[in-house]
Amino acid sequence: MKCIVLAAGEGKRMHPLTFTRPKVMLPIANKPILEWNLLNAIDAGLTEFVFVVGYKSEIVRNYFGDGKKWDVSIEYVNQVKALGTAHAIGMVEKFADNFIVLCGDTIFGTQDIKQVIEREMSMGLVQVEFPEEYGIVEMDGEKVVKIYEKMKDPFSNVINAGIYHFNQSIFDIIKKTEKSPRGEYEITSSINMLADDVEMSGITLKEWRDVVYPWHLLDANEEMLKGTKGKVEGTVEENVILKGPVFIGKGTKVMSGSYIEGPVVIGNDCKIGPNCYIRPSTSIGDECHVGNACEIKNSIIMNRSNVPHQNYVGDSVIGEDCNLGSGTKIANLKLDKKNITVVANGKRFNTKRRKLGVVMGDNVQTGINAMFNVGSMVGNNAFVGPGAVVDGEIKPHAQLF
Image 1 (spheres, one colour):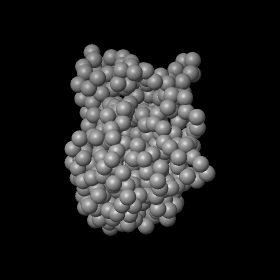
Image 2 (cartoon, helix red, strand yellow):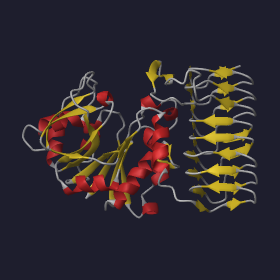
Image 3 (tube, helix red, strand yellow):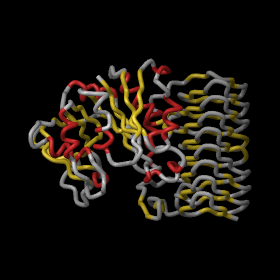
Image 4 (cartoon, one colour):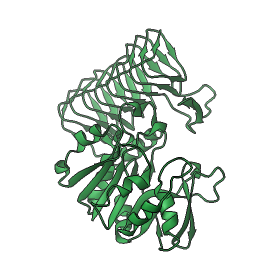
């Protein structure tokens, strides 16, 4: 059975992180979202995959190749224009007749994937606290009646989870599907047409993790790190404290005086310390540097980024190839302890988080003693000068002095 993975989207709600990569390639616990889905699908027994790619597809292709690293087969279909999920699935007609579809930017558990594999013409359902961002599913017992996209006043908290089991009949329906009010050919519209004649079953999922906005990466990272097993593949000097599950990658050197509280994952070829403090739920990518008198807490540091001198990074997402100047500090808690609001893509959002530092795109450089206020959103290739105070949304390539 083929597994079709939808991985073509940019993920605009994940700006500034997706200015430079597709959403499916955002790292959680040092693996791209798409790799977590691949691994879980493999554990569910699937070995043949078709990735539908589009936006910055070369990043996906270069990372996964033909799948040999995972002992599976991966083929690619390129969706040149983002015309919707139905259009994307319709493009794989010649590859599959009875198949699974996964939305590549949502993490599905192995057992849930197995359930969907076992029931033809089915889809995954999940109950969420805030259903307004999703498609609401009307049910009659286990039968799907209709899907309603992004209702302002949803009548239910049961949503479309983004995993499906279709047979060949779906392709005829897709060909009859018209554009939605959003200007896309959506698979939910196709399912609504299908449900008039064919019974589509709903399966309630138990393991499901979606990331809609950048700060959701921190929740997912914390959850995925709970399964971390401690292992040291690098070098750890004397007078280093490793407390709880800490994974240290190959070629990484942890220097004297470093104190690391797991769960923490540190990638390959990093330099950690001396005398730094890394707190739980932190992921540090490959070729990173965390230096003297630095503290990192509940954060994601992507590949080749440096937190080198007297820095504090809390509840933050730092992109690739960033460098924090000496004394750069990131605030993560308001004085009134209330939830943090952010401005992203020009719109204001309540993150529903009491603690949130900065979301920083790739290749951001900061000068000495730069300061970031809570909920700052900084675009890629921005320069923040010495002593500058950053607040709100900073566009890519901006210069603050």
